[in-house]
Length: 115
Picture 1 (cartoon, rainbow, N blue to C red):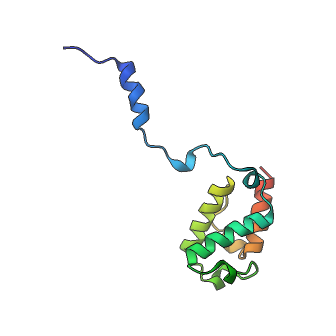
Picture 2 (spheres, rainbow, N blue to C red):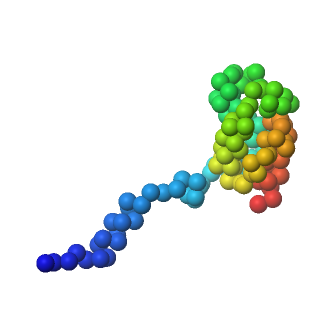
Picture 3 (tube, rainbow, N blue to C red):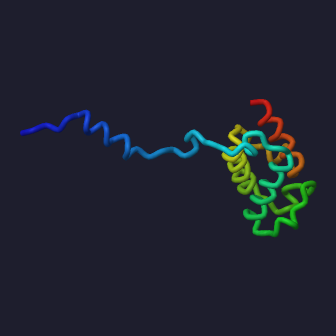
């Protein structure tokens, strides 16, 4: 009986290992590495419009998220998207602590600039 070479087996085992996408190293464009508050707000407006199924023009940066119809599930989704896009950790309660696009953009900008 011939045994297979253990080095060959290990070489192929790595390729079959699933990758956890939240822990992958990300590369970002320059504007997302050092975004402005306006770029953050634009991204948030786009994502909120998509999540809430409304036109971006209907979303004012000073309107509270709750008044836009955002649920707690939507808030968690938005926070996750912001974390992924800007590579920062954001507290789960951030959407309630900073309840408008304008407030959240300023908060996120301070997180980005402090890393």
